Figure 1 (spheres, rainbow, N blue to C red):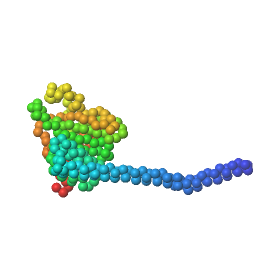
Figure 2 (cartoon, rainbow, N blue to C red):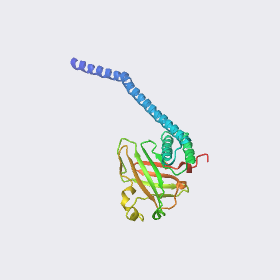
Figure 3 (cartoon, helix red, strand yellow):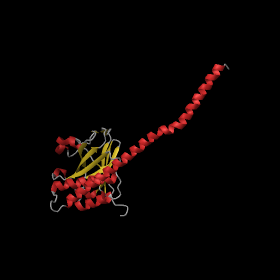
Figure 4 (tube, helix red, strand yellow):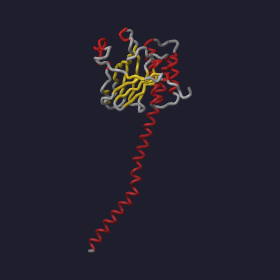
Length: 253
C-alpha cells in the first residue's frame, strides 16, 4: 500500500477513535445541563402546584370565616355563591390535587349546608371541569321530566372539540342509569321549549378558557339530589365524573 494512503487511513482512524473517546467523555457532561434544566422545571412545577394548593386552602379559610360570621350573616344568593365556591375548590383539591382530607371536608360541607347546590367534577389532569345544577321548574308541562343545567369549562390553552362524541349519563344511587337527552323536534317538550332549542344542545367546541353552558333533559320525574350517585359527562376524548359525594359510601361505610 502506498505510504501516503497508509498515512491517510491512519489519520482517519486516529480522528475517528478520538471522536469516540471524546463522545464517551463529553456526552454525559453535555447531558448534565439538560438534566439540571429538567430538574429545575420539575421543581418549578412542584412549587407552582404547592402554590395552587396553598392558595386554595387560603380561599377556603376565608369562605369558612364568611359563612361563620354571625355579625354579618350571608343569606340568599350571597351565601349560595360562597358555598358553591367552596364546593368547587374542595372538589378540585380532592380530585386533582388528591389531598386525603378533602373528600371528608366535602361531605361535611354538603351535610351542613344542604344538598341543593351545584356539584363539580374535574378531569384528573385539571384541564377540564364541569358542574351541574338541577333546575326546579313549576310549569306543569315539565312534571314528567327533570332538567339539569351544565357548565363545561375548558382550562387548557387549546380549543377542545367533541368530534361528535358528546353525551351525559346519570347513575342513580340504586344502580339504575339513564342517558340525558338534548331537545329534538320529536321530544314531547319541544312545543314548550322550541325557542330555546340551542340551549338544550351539547357544544361541539369549547374555546380555550371558555365556559359552555347547556341544559339536558332526563325523561323521568321527581329525581332529586338524594337520588344521584354521579353524572358521567363525555366530551370527545375527555370524561368527567361529577360525583354527589354524600350519596356515595366511603370504604369504611
